[in-house]
Length: 296
Length: 296
Image (cartoon, rainbow over all chains, first blue to last red; front, side, top):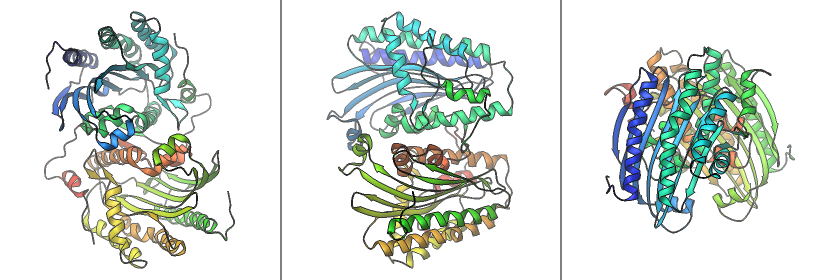
């Protein structure tokens, strides 16, 4: 699985795997009780990955940080879905999903990826926040953090990637976003060294976008009502990931490791037919909150 | 929404709606505590339906019996997915999903549908069982009930529809079926009156395929371990419905009523990374059980 480190592909894989180690250390420290279980796996058909999952921690009900580097050829069914004729692909990436136990602490997600199809090479990635309860202060902090990262590389990035994020994490059948967005980029081509520098900056910046929010919210009291609402909102998270998320579709369709791909799903989720929050309640405010807005 | 009863389409819709009333009465009686909430809805673009959901009953944590009759034209995205050029469609159907509270009582599903696309007309349907814990006696009863219904109409039906069910309810990324199958049929064309007689027989037979299983299992004791395993198995149910189920995809892609389409999702579901049941336990036996087998 290891490639020559001197190639871009090798350096990217190397960065993702060292970022995984750093993030796991920092997240375990932040949790204070849980620790990451680490599994290495091989993919039939080429490549493999390392999954690291912390379950039932003090802060995180589930936290996963996965890396994978896979290669192979698209089968007929997948080729039909994605179009084109080139079957050969490689995909290297890191994915992070944090599902806190407390409904007052938002779920967070980040992903960085390096893809090739034939001679075509591009980067993708992003990070987004999914609170159960609306909180303007947290949302502004999160967006401002990512705007600062973007602005260090290209003055147009934040606006473009924020809009892409609003579009990507939209759940059509619910008429709302999965959460409050962040940044999302795909098909970043061109000066690959500069793009890789931006991607590294994103990876290194994740914790500063999220840790201050955790610090503010983890001590907030909650009860059964807030927990029930969190599980209900997590149902939307499941709907988005299984119905619309391209990474999940790609992983399942290319016969990736199901346990690693579905690490993103919450530990517990709830569906309630025609749930109607009390008018004027914090739960009622949530639905309006999960619409695209200017957050900086 | 009401059509002339004399047409086949009108008679089918009429049958589905009267079956819904009967099933709700019988299921509420079986539950003993809960009652069905009934919602009529209209679909923008044509048609509508009636959703009936019982929540937090004594037997059923969630039970849903939906009917709908919708019509319209496929949009470009959906046309691309299904192929062909004919956009005009109508779809009339009844769907039933029962999620018992007790892990010892299997989840059950049935669906009957009447579809047209341009001049093409066909029926589809079926019923399948999803226990958390393997039980041969229950599974044999369920399959024998459906074989008896099939045999009254065509000696080849059970074998064909049982195989289709094994194929349809397969979860590729898990390498197992959603449950223990039953029957599944689609694209039943030809003598539509005879097919409608078979479809009615299926609708009328559902309770006798399921009620004896409920009677045997509802008194069985269970604890936290069994409940946790049920919620874990329900996670697979969610995965199947959101990733692979054609009815769910069709409903979401044709802008159906999300609350009615997703009525099939369990009230609570759980995901556990790399769950490994104790060797030799009943939980370990489940994975082997959910493979196609001869049950009659």
